[in-house]
Amino acid sequence: MKLIVNGEALEIAATTLAALLAALDYEGDWLATAVNSDLVHKANRAEFRLSDGDRIEILSPMQGG
Amino acid sequence: MFELYGTELSSRLLLGTAQYPSPAVLADAVRASGTSVVTVSLRREMAGGRAGEKFWSLIRSLGTRILPNTAGCHSVKEAVTTANMAREVFGTTWIKLEVIGNHDTLQPDVFGLVEATRILCEDGFAVFPYTTDDLVAAERLLEAGCKVLMPWCAPIGSALGPVNMTALRSMRGHFPGVPLIVDAGLGRPSHATTVMELGFDAVLLNTAVARAADPVGMARAFSKAVEAGREAYSSGMLEPRDVAVPSTPTIGRAVFS
Image (cartoon, rainbow over all chains, first blue to last red; front, side, top):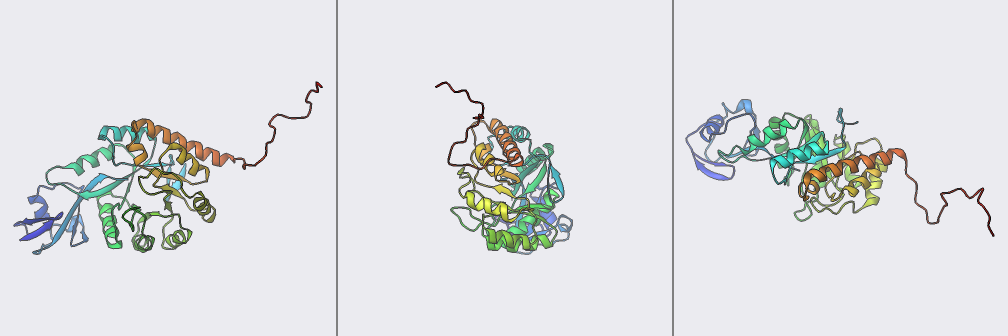
């Protein structure tokens, strides 16, 4: 399936958001995820099924003012 | 002590965490500042780098309260989604709300800001809106549900200091019971003292400390400056006048001619 992850096109076998995170080696509780501009809560990632062309944002804490 | 959204804070200086020369200097500057609130952001995680995890671990070790921001958001939708993502990661309902309206000045889009404030307040957020010094926008923000206002005193990172003292003074006068935090534009400790002398409750700054030759020393300087301004405001200052007034009593003066 073709996805846009953090602005980059990826071809990936994962079908759920949780599987995508695992495939990309994103583990831990410091990440927030959004699909097509809407937040997907941590608790819902395992059930959240991805579709071809989905835009996924994976954000983490960073310096800010 | 002063209170923001029911939380008592010991320091009236809020500090950003960006642009420091190293994580160690950031940590030392935060400690030297005595701040009890630091601002942080959310950015795209880089695959395998774990930069976010390391940074988050450092911030948690500082023991301060976290004020996540929506820096860089240019629309209501972006800001609201970012705020929701921040609530999930940082485990706080506090959000420094930025909806940028002008690319060159980073001036807030006050119309979008009011709308995003309403949406987030209804959803249980404690909104800290980064706004202009406009009284009407401030009034609308309070109507939208926020309990704190954060007017700029000059564009972000400009180090210009308070460029419109009249506007800041008006804001203090119009909203006597609302916590007012000057956010953005401070360049020197004396700027912080000046706005604290006007009666502002706190200041939020980043660049002036982070980009100083010695950020730790500058953090300490700002801490003292904020305290000095607050104590001066609380102690009641003299009004300036155009003519001299002798400070030594004239009664009992010797006559030698």
